[in-house]
Amino acid sequence: MNDVSDAKNPIVDPAVVAQLKSWGGYVDAKLGFRNHWYPVRFSDELEEGKPSPFQLGGEKLLINRIDGKAYCMADTCLHRGVPLSEKIECYSKATITCWYHGWTYDFKDGNLCDILTDPNSKMIGNRALQTYPVEEAKGLVFVFLGDVAEGDKPPALALDLPPGFLDEDRYALGIRREIGSNWRLGAENGFDTTHIFIHKDSTYITARDAPIPLGFATLPGLELDIHDRDDAPKGVVDPLMGNYQPVFAAEIDGKPALSSHRPDGAHQTIFRISLWLPGILTVENHPEPDITQVEFYVPIDERRHMYFQVLSKAGVTQPEQVQRYREEFTSLHEPLALRGFNDDDIWAREASQSFYDDDRGWLEEQLFEADHNLIAWRKLASDHGRGIQRPPKTGAAKVVEKL
Ligand code: FES
Ligand SMILES: [Fe+2]
Image (tube, rainbow, N blue to C red; front, side, top):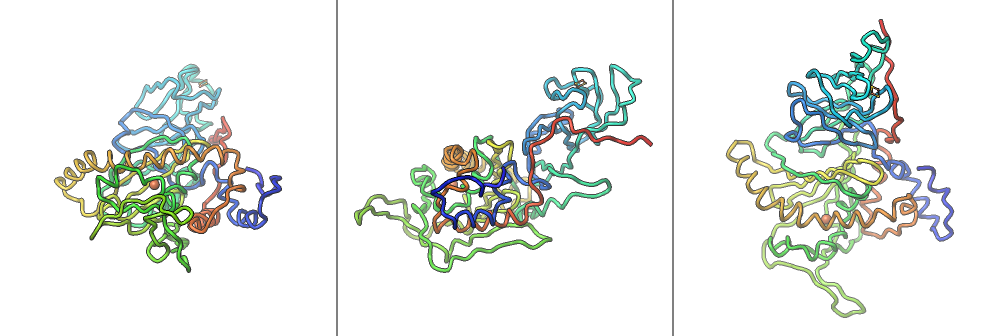
């Protein structure tokens, strides 16, 4: 967006504008941050020789598996701009042919390697579609949405993942869903401590005997752990303990109004929460003590994100442990936690979208004390995002020089 501080609004507090300016890059990152790794599929969804279209940061892309390895290429024919995925035609293992006039591209480097309707064309070998690096880890397929100079490598995938996610003894299982809100409303919903208010009616609480307070009263001296070293993942960790007092009973005008489930005796609690670039939440000790819930909010376009909900469990290395975890995931965690509990988060994000749709919401919102961790995240993302993803130009061809 353009400079939001130019927006005319007589009721806006100047202090809010000053605060906003300190994280202006975040407001600009409507399509996400460029030059970062994003998950786009689970590995078991990507079949050999079956190109699959998807959108990332507003760009139409195709992903395919060839001899076991995944490749990602633009889904826009250079000739007349049609999506190749409109009618997928592959006449050799490593290529895709445009259904319209037969321009044929190599998946590995995007090169226009042949034109089936005019094999004498001088365009052959002189044009290429944009390709992006792909890596697979922990059952997820990641695409590097960014620009890598010839002979260079993208930043390591581990720099765009929460610390520990790639640990050898951890096993990850998850689901993904398309959500009708900007990716930032997803990221902030998860990290926002007082949003717990929306979960007070969840069956997860009674079924698991979980302590879910109505909210978290802020205590003096709020502290966050800011990770901003160059050679490590960038994120904000909220330790929870020491920052807040859980609220289990609320009053209005001094009279009891509402209370929430507070089990007696020992019970599990969430250990801490954190939010990492380019938009990944971790909730430790949730939904079980040895599981970390990891959520990726992947920008599809300005108004949609792909919500990856992944549960990463420690101590799962042997085939029988994997089998047991899969059963536990399918019968318990997926229905109760990822769908039952997190469905509340989804409608909350979608209900927030219209307020932020034209970006004025970033200026007009009135944050309160408990939102301090969101401000810290916005500043961190603004300072350390590797670039702003801009709306794609269609038909931008890489011109390959002929030797
Ligand atoms: S539009 Fe694709 S070959 Fe003509
Ligand atoms: Fe939530």
